[in-house]
Length: 159
Image 1 (cartoon, rainbow, N blue to C red):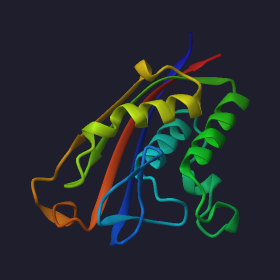
Image 2 (image 1 turned 60 degrees about the vertical axis):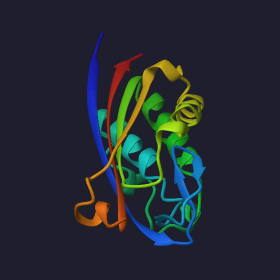
Image 3 (image 1 turned 90 degrees about the vertical axis):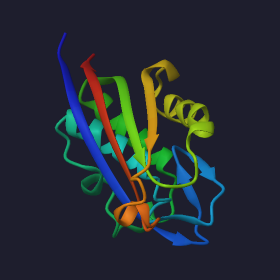
């Protein structure tokens, strides 16, 4: 069996009174991530990990932030499109391990819903999706709640 590992990273600026979508879940918070799509930092990092593992470039190559087709779009759709690209090349997703880094809001209560959204978009079990969160101990742009960061690794297998 042929397997590959991929790594993804994403960062988005946080703005007051802006929606905050993470893992396909809209969080209640006074700030939210800003971007061309819904700015779902977690799903963008996962897409990059999957695309990288399959040697298919990155999320910006496939879903350009200058293309109006992707303006305001749900990143769940971007994840589904990413999985289609992998499937076309003969790959399937084995598992995903992701980490969010932000000061607030608390992510833990939302992890099961995020896992469910991601599992449904990819077509795998929630047992194959690990999501964790940490703070930056009030340091830097994350500590000042100016931005949010996500990291993801994945395993893909040749079908």
